[in-house]
Length: 255
Image (cartoon, rainbow, N blue to C red):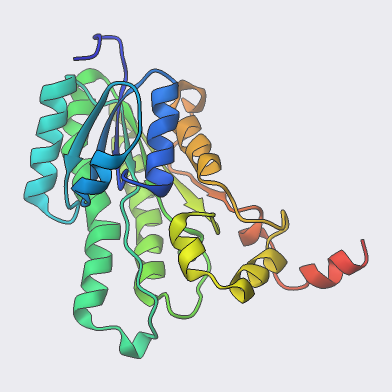
């Protein structure tokens, strides 16, 4: 059990990638961290030191979410930050996307953050406030082929962020979003071909993929006291990808 003064973060989708990097960032700052993931074996394999609690949980299941947050509260006694990172992706043409596939993406990426925030908010309110960060995506800002379910879910999550911020600000809960651009995760390395990576490099002013730790740093900032007057915002951590249109390769030739 942590000391009463220790802050506690709940991070979903924490078995790997951005979620695991974010858990490590909070632990480095001395927080206790509850790591939630549908992959219980992946959680067990996570190599972290500090005050942690590992919970296998499907964020799309209301009963599992309620049980998980009750478990966190019983173990740690408080919840100061919630990072809604759990997500799933589907890359298919619109006409080939089944209703079941569409529904699962929305259930995890949009309903999951709704359920987790709804379960955490009463705990935060009782202790005087807290912070929520929803991990959205640059795909919620820019449409692209093969991402009808994923992009739509992330766009919806951006608006959910604003709704939560508007309603919970007066009870001391800040709610923001972080929208990663292309990040060098294990999934990206597995599915992004050399041509895809080259295309992204051409479209990103910083001319590279982001790092998981760079996303974690942004999440940590928004949950920290340094962001005490920031709520209802979406921070794109994308190397400038969303800020530009066509023409970067030609521009670089003349630099």
